[in-house]
Length: 126
Image (tube, rainbow, N blue to C red; front, side, top):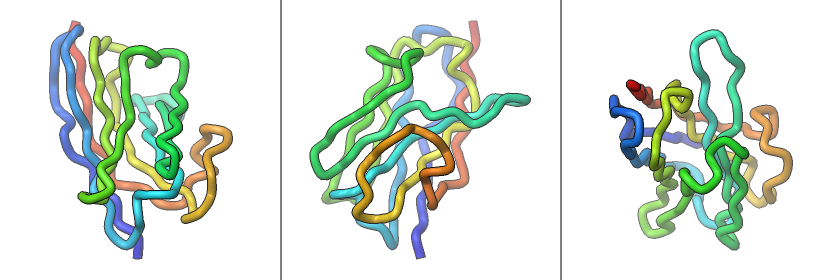
């Protein structure tokens, strides 16, 4: 059974940084598509970025390009989201998600992902 566990959320001031981690079990991080999503209160869940870990190919939503970086540690079977220059509008619950093993990344939409973590809260104060 796939289990994804996020950690690293917290409260920071605007301009600060956080690194989120997603530890996977029952799922091999290498050679798969994994993503990060976020959801603010009253808003739909939106894709932040995704990575095809087989080739470390990444894709980001426009609002985070140049500020956020997704990376992987295959030895630790862990996915990361480095968030720099955080803005108040980046606040929300952040979720790690995975597509079925062997699937490449396509459209960055929640419906494409079948396994989800419980989320970690990010708060950014102005």
